[in-house]
Image (cartoon, rainbow, N blue to C red):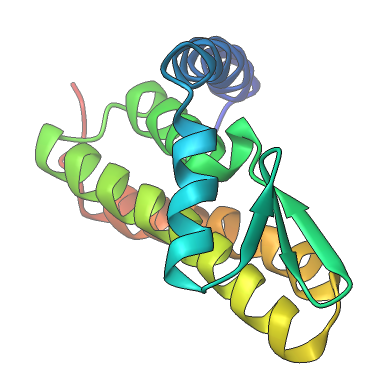
Length: 143
């Protein structure tokens, strides 16, 4: 793993993240997600903030899976993973981030704490790095 690849992956991540962030804001996807979560968990929602007991969460653009998706795509593209691995990993990355959001809200309501939200931030990057290493070890060498 060279420093050049790490640098390329980092800058590609920043570019993808910025593009996905703009798209999320343009489509107002985070507001839709907040309303969806409020209906799923039967929470009160006011001005985009979900309330459960004394705890409030605002669905931000980052809650829509853009961080995980950007990270995965940057790694997969930089290290030239085959398309099937890239697509499968993108699905897992996106779903892992949505799982993080659902677990954060559920556990936050049950425990009446925002601590699950903070701790679960590490779940998607961990899953992504494990998937990347797994798929990277299975790819054919590029000649």
